Image (cartoon, rainbow, N blue to C red):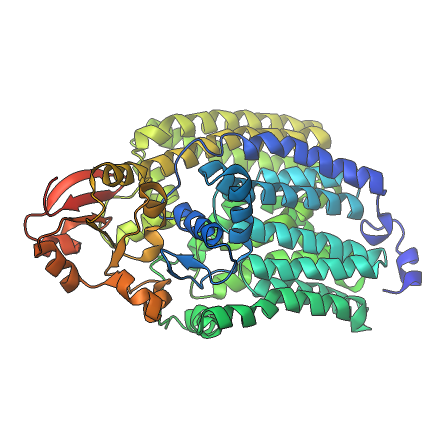
Length: 591
């Protein structure tokens, strides 16, 4: 970046107005301190959500028991769907604190804290301490981000590595610190190691495009220094050789089946998840970051109107706008979309929103937020006063992957009844209504500071309700109760079977201590393991189960499928032993 051009840009909110190191660190520390109680309280209060969390926790426990990172296994068969970083970190947590729900969720929670801290730090470096603090807290108060920060999945870790990468790479560019850019690229490499190789490739492209638009993309080594490229690619793809050696076919699965054929909707190992429409995805993704998308969009529009892409001082903000918008646009254009696919854009949205609150007109911004919170309060109030059918269908039924799968099977959704959610929705209506009132007053008074902190306080007051709702869902569909029944009543020589994809059986093994055989589970995103010699005996078809069922031994079967769609319909004398969380436990001979 031309130093002379940067100095001439003095006074423009961006590169030349970098705040001091101390104030940036203070903003990050304060944002993290606020986030700690929200993200860390009660992590181990309920069993694993299943399907969902249990699979990932079981993979980590098998890694710890095996004493090696590769090959990853689930139920003793090869697992190749996600990279090993999440599981290695959980295994480390288990080795220190013991295998538990709290230790497993702690990895995601700590990753979320890292994302909050680095988002606040970057906001302070590109603006001022208040901008940084608002950005960090805006990320925390984004409901979609907060929920996955308390959930066992790679997504919070993925967002954290991206946030670190952008913070270091962008600040390194504007401060001419090549070493920091190198470390930022390495963080993008870790993003690929956390979830997807696109995490190593797409963010540098967004930065490079912003540099090119400002006509300062040369030399390329400025934003793609070769040591950083080598480290990033080594982290992102170098371990593929080890994975391929440990599990032949891994590279084909990752590159061809999980990416190329997935886009073409022609996977060999299809995902059972039901994708969202483009409109549903946009709605879920934007509501998960509401209302921060309003100032973020307003700031992006201001940058576009001012043709800020031509100004080197605005390169970091243009890169963030390209990244945030690109995530949503490209995912909407993809044929396969899930609710959490918008999460990688949330740090960029939080940063743009924080600058929007600083630079845009306070009256219209506060008024827009008052309207949004007021509409949400009215919607929650109407839902609270009714039977909740609309809420269960349009909110839970769209945002919850397991509920969408159940709807396809014409089964009852695996979530609690409306009566469990009703008090939370009523409390949300009250909080949102008070927040809308405070923002309306701030709009009239043009009180910018009051408006932004009223928004933050309102949304932070919603976070405990979101955590309780997550706990309700996890407790309802946890398999811990049925697993305890098997652990108590099944003999060592009994056969234990689980119907459906292997990814739905992880928590059962975690809680029962029994490794089930998988019945009718070859239509699964994880059925790759069934093609390996070590996995063939782990996967049964219905005929083999029927033979065992009629044999002299005792056979237990757990299934989440409706009886009319389950193998149970063809099993004679199947005794229903227990039911819960949308699953049933059968046995051929009652002990």
